[in-house]
Length: 260
Image 1 (tube, rainbow, N blue to C red):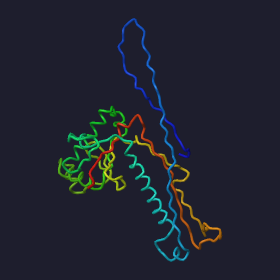
Image 2 (cartoon, one colour):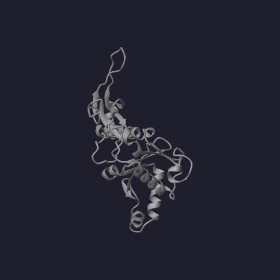
Image 3 (cartoon, one colour):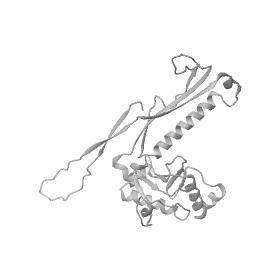
């Protein structure tokens, strides 16, 4: 979107059903509302300078390839930014899978307990009355690469047709197993993994800057001399904002994990 802020309302005070007494009046309940605001206010950019000689002599320094690399790095920043909002999610730790301790205590992920983590998240979504959104949007995990390895080991060791397929072909990002979609990322904040109902966490991206590729020929030097450089500058930027909806915090989980 091209707006700086987007406001959305949610029901702050959930109503409850009451007893019906025939012949008597009904008591209306106030449906209190509150507002959440998604603000796009954080940005990153990346600019590369190439001398004209290098630009023309290097076969790998063509514009298309370099802009692809700039875009990939900016997209990694977006991914890291989403995963860095873990503090706004619900804590999930050793006690969440029946291991005692607290929800903030880190889990040592292994091939023998990765299914416990998946089942535990599914249970907590049900307890938070999130089944409707789960059915509508699906449930997802974004594991670390090391966790995804344990998931692959578990898939290959359990079942028949599924295990045979995993043994023959391995597993890839986007795997659907135990009713959940599984992804992986190298951009997590250390010791934090995401799990929860999909399409709940909100990401705002400024349409006007995202994906725009700017080529600046003979860019000027930032000085009083007004010199310019004999080359080409390639530049792009992204502006983003995040929102964890207050009404659905219980459907998103900060899975606390031990460093692999």
